[in-house]
Image 1 (cartoon, rainbow, N blue to C red):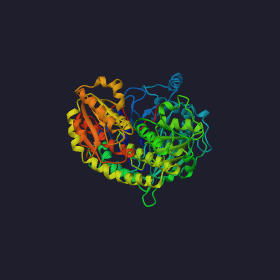
Image 2: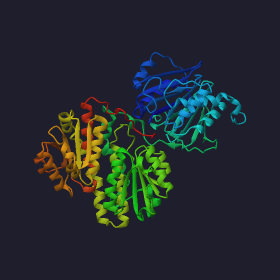
Image 3: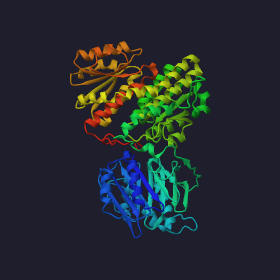
Image 4: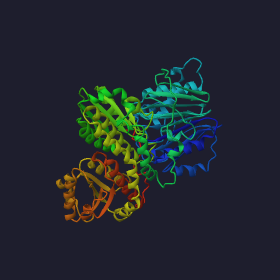
Length: 623
């Protein structure tokens, strides 16, 4: 939810920390701060608002030191303010922590610490961690110190372990202490932490985006694990001090992939990257010569997939919309009964997981806490689990029985775009993979493979309409209520189009099955309400035309996404965005693109910060 960066090495820490914060600002932008241990004392600088505010304050400082922690916040406990910004110090001012997550028992701990003489200066749950570590740090008699570690570094390590055992909830933390200027401690439970291992330096972060400028080697901490880092190396263990053999992994993407590359916003860059990212997603998986789909990540469970009796998909937000497309695909192509759950609701009801159930969890980050909880609940009940994620090394990728990576590259824009098309592409390939092994003919599969291979170039064609879509957005961007309507495979696309408009333009938009309009929402139709129809040539085309006539009869303004060459649509729609023709099941990969552009242009025209929409962050790692 928030962004964490910490550095220990030979270089000056401050510029490295600030640069890392900038790369993580999409994870939170309510406030930010850094703490650096210098030759004489710890220096703390914090600011409410964007990181640029922090940078202005730092120009007036001369912060020297090669060990430090930094944080960019998305507020949970306590309003966005300088006092609530991280890092937080203990009441002695010698220990600093940064924290991502929620401490559920912080009220009880805070009261206990106050009774022990600790003082607090913020409204946050995070400050409890600093003071709890401090309490144990100064309570030397009760520290369980390894032999030969009766010095500040050993005290800090032991105190951190004791403190973490008392915490209920989730955390990713980094800890430093004025008394131990050569030690950095980090730990996680439910909130991602990555340790970048460089040449004589270490960078800890909540996301590899803050690491890749310095090293391509990373260690991904598991739940209830911690790392104690010194200038000579690092040791990983469980919070209960059981050694863990860490594995250094190669970060898969390059620094250039998280640069703007000439675009004004990451969202625009990622929309226009989709021809390339879809090619990468499909690459090596579509064997045109043999007419096969090859998904290496599920090879070991292929028999279980073919014999499956039921599929359940759990996801949140945009990934949930991709899951809805998956429901149509698995039932239509593979003949498998499929349910789609909001991951946030899945474990709070009594889901039926019967023999032969496959649980598919979909998450761009692989760290979405609700989706992770749904995965764990389903596995506990005996389901075979399959992850569809983008981030290599993520928690979901490591905890599922098998999985398929999107391979669409890092997605920085808070409003997901290329991850959605990647998720739909992966679910399509998976449905076809199962279908061929159950009943689909080789000839029919080859038709889908050939059509999928054309999708990236077809997306490229759609993107040439960006200027036209901008003009339509200009005309309607001040309208505060919109409807998005579609049938069949286009119903989830209508939901996704409405979500995109809501989250970055702050326009109220509602997505519905087109036929449901008559069951209430038609009362809203006026000449002031734009209605977006996904009206492509498909099995329900005539039904959609009837719905459009009903809106037109009531004076509604219609924007349509239609198939190229459809002249009839002009009789109903005021504006038309065209997509190339393709198979019905593949149309969502194309129809969503004009809606992404429509939302993007509307937000820019309204003057909003597209990459940092209010109240939102990229990866939801707290409940």
